[in-house]
Amino acid sequence: MTGTVERRAGTAAAPRRLGRRPRAVLRTAHVVLAIGWTGLSTVLLVLPAAALLQGSGSEFAVPAMALVGGGLVPFFAVGTVLTGAALGIGTPWGLFRYRWVVVKTVLSLAVIAGSVALNTGWIDAAAADPSLLWPLLLSAALHQVMLLSATVLSVEKPWGRLRRG
Image (cartoon, rainbow, N blue to C red; front, side, top):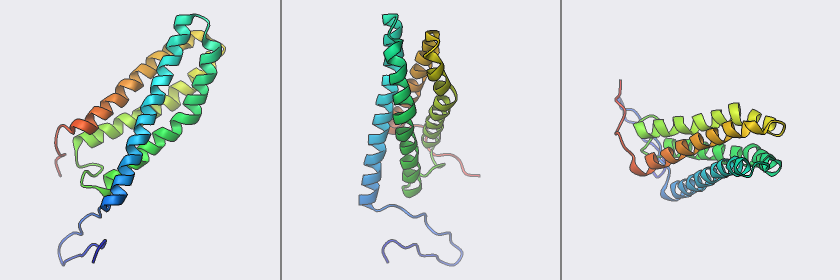
């Protein structure tokens, strides 16, 4: 029987796996969303840098950052995490089988938490106080490093499996 899991007496059922086509669609969606998230993170890095270099560019940069950070990034970030989790559940990589998957997930969740906790308030406050562009720039640089590190982990898949028990 295709798509079913047989259970023998005394043995655990094998985990379900996605079929080839659904896995390819999900992987493609995950990569596209992750590329979009990294690109938008780059925009959030360039905007405060440009405003700081220009000296008076915060009139454009802050509303643009609010649009990107508040409207677009959450969609791509959550979509990336959800498609990644679905891939972990539906493929042999799993969610907690390999160190690189766990570290990549932690990095992604840390960027989301940092964006929600720090950037949202700083972007709103930067409209009145342009000196807050510096923390926004540093936060965006850190997020970029974390997202690029997650990309390297996806490509290289280092460190092997987690130990059981």
